[in-house]
Image 1 (cartoon, rainbow, N blue to C red):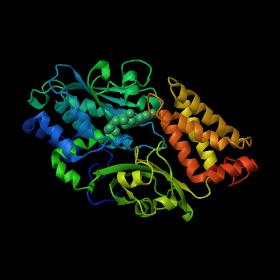
Image 2 (image 1 turned 135 degrees about the horizontal axis):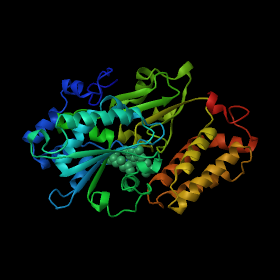
Image 3 (image 1 turned 120 degrees about the horizontal axis):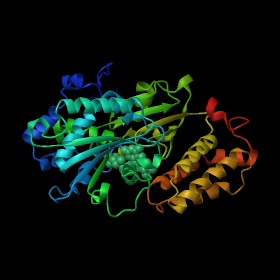
Length: 432
Ligand SMILES: Cc1cc2nc3c(=O)[nH]c(=O)nc-3n(C[C@H](O)[C@H](O)[C@H](O)COP(=O)(O)O)c2cc1C
């Protein structure tokens, strides 16, 4: 794992997910410090000062979200860890749940104390098996050790936790869709305002944070906001977990100090592209972030500011490396099939738009593309943007226009010649 100081990672052993080893690594020290020495508002202040940004996709400041919750408003408050991890290419929360579930639980206890939460939840994607079992075991261990329930560690603070398994819908990872699902309804996203921090679960103030975002809290309380900001760059403090997949010699989950040189990371830490092929492009942070070409990323650093300047985002940290020789038409077809399948159908532009994008890609791949199909794909992508309740429709449009912007010639070739530039049929993606 590259970087000079690491926050989330440690050498994994067969039992490092269990409570005794977590304690041996100093685990639950931050909770003891919080309950013994800090007022709830001190915790919120420290997290705000750290500049920690959400790791679920939008990079929203965690402290700013927390500040909206009024500690003493007399209402129940809720905290939810978003462990849905449905963004294609993203599997870093899974790493935390499998290898270090107690860091999430400890951090959630600290956050619950800060936000006056008596009941917190982990919403975990339905397909997760080992991560679920590891988390459920960790919850049991924590209850047995008096870390959850009434009067945690004799402090007077009480907190319960529920682990709720979703049914495997991408849209249920969107914070308001997740809340609908948790309430026992279809996982439909809700219109905002009101914000979830004002009216969320059961119409009460609710904070939804990503698993990795929350898991940083214990470290921040132990080491302080200044130590956190000393890692990374001024606009991108801390580290991030990147899940790296695709055409790469050493796929996996890596903790990287933000600001780390991107090509050094791929070439040296991840072992480069198999057979020494050149990098055609990289999906930086889940397929909803716009692709960047190998040339685009040559001098970029892994920071929010570098990615924003380049017209993309670090998103959910799901990095997919795509080597030269890969057909982007076939790749986009797969992505549009995904968005179409996952659209919940509430909003007309998304329900029809994702289907339309998918069907146009299908016909281009089948050799029936029309001369104006590229303009039509652009039109639909733009039409979706900002016209829907949640970001799913927008994301489909970004993914589509992002690939068209960089690789338009491949689509033109395909429509004109009725076959991929990279071989007789468009299934070449699979064999590349
Ligand atoms: C379609 C869709 C799917 C999403 N899926 C996830 C997910 O699986 N995990 C996640 O943490 N955030 C997901 N998000 C983002 C959440 O809505 C929310 O912004 C996030 O959980 C907030 O946590 P953070 O501020 O700590 O990043 C998704 C958003 C959209 C639009």
